[in-house]
Amino acid sequence: MTLLLQKDPTTTISESITSFYNDFIAQLPGIGIGILIVILGLLLGSWVGSFVKRKLAARTGDPLMSKFLGQAIKYVSVIIAVMLALEASGLGAIATGILTAAGASAVVLGFAFKDIGQNFIAGIIMAFSRPFDVDDTVQIDDNFGKVKALEFRYTKLKTFDGKDVYIPNSDVLTKPVTNFTEDGFFRWDFIIGIAYENNIEGAKETILKALRKEPNVIEDEEHENFVIEDELATSTVNLKVFFWVDTKDFRRIALITKGNVVRNVKEELEEAGYYMPADIQEIKLYGGETEFPVKINPKE
Image (cartoon, rainbow, N blue to C red):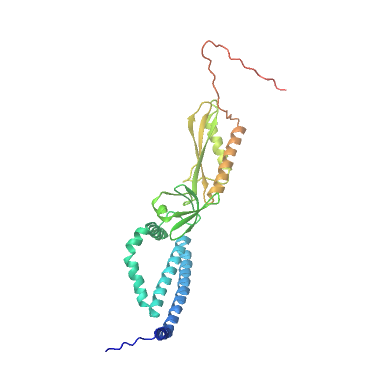
């Protein structure tokens, strides 16, 4: 007859706790080293990222690229530090499992987070090659404003009415981008009408004289201001005025300059004796009517 002896459950639990405690005590030095590696990795990554950011900003004058690369170095350093800490703590199997799981799930995650991946890759490309710098005035799709930041997933624009717009980097990379301040110049235009009996060449000279009186209007060999005959309208000969302005402060100074130019042109033409009539309405009588009764109220 075989006699089966059963262990006391209390004894089994006690042995398990004791074994776990002994293993934990044995792991403490490794865990301590792992925590130290993580802390050093965080500090070193932050320091190296900030150092690279400052050096690149000073060397290239490009705050967007320097900030982007500084952040990338910081995050990569933290990831490496965590993996080394797991190895030092005796948890290398966990680190290997993380890498294996990341590789196995790369395809699934690629489909699940396709947009995030696209924006991240676009951000890396734009860190080295892009059509704008910080504080440039740009239009991306329907968004118009100043560039304020380039992050891993989006580009931040500050519109001139105070809105913060976050545009996915993939859109910035694939859609047309209009940069109003890359070379610092923009050409305004507007139309002004003079009477048919006025001298056209004289009016054009008067308008160019008014343009030269505005200090914020730019004129040199490359940027020429001019006036052309645009249209023979119902009651006026319309002249189109073209002039250049500085766009470093595009939304404010450029608009103020345009307003000053329109006012100066009007006043100069009036002082020179040019007439700017309103639209003339022609009334035709049909049928048997030969007269059109008009009543004029005398001025008091």
